[in-house]
Amino acid sequence: MTSLDHVRRVVGSRPGVVDHDPSARPAAVAVILHEAADGISALFIKRAEQVGDPWSGQIAFPGGRFEEGDSDLLSTAIREAREETGIDLGAAEQLGVLDDVNPRSPHLPPIFVRPFVFALKHRPPHTNSPAEVQRSFWIPFNTLLDPATSDQITLTFRGVPRTFTAYKAEGEVIWGMTERIVRLFLERITA
Image (cartoon, rainbow, N blue to C red; front, top):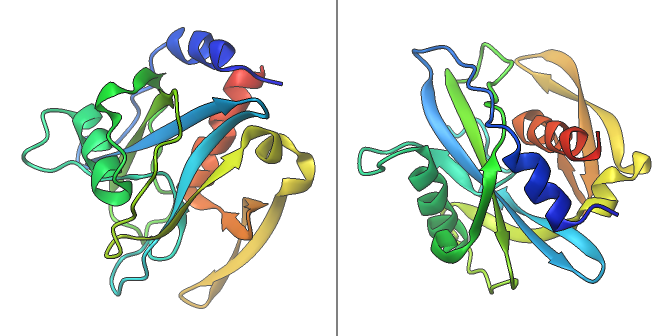
């Protein structure tokens, strides 16, 4: 079982790789962790259904695009987590930064996402913003590390079927950039 001390050492041992098109719009997410007797869990959100939002209804980490009032991408991740879930990460321990992730589809806006990893001592109550989040929930690492949770899904975009690697947990499917962040993170901490 992976401990928070181990995650702290591994994530803090090197900065995330900055890798994006300079014209891509910056965004950030908060990978929020909590350790309990049964291990580490991560907080996920199900995005609200919104017309015109290419990530509508998907499972994600709290986060969003950099806005003019943000001093940097870390402040974007903290602001978005507070706006979407009501969780204030100001007192949370920041463990580090993961590698930038970009959409793989030319049909998505040119953005890059920088994941910041935080640890909470206690699971605070979270109050979702109904305009942005349908629900938020914790998934244990043990669930995500279980090979039975990983699967392939086929989705059709603009009439073309595409197959993606995904996690199936808590009655939800985690795919796309969130799946890649989870997979890269878990590979890094279990290497």
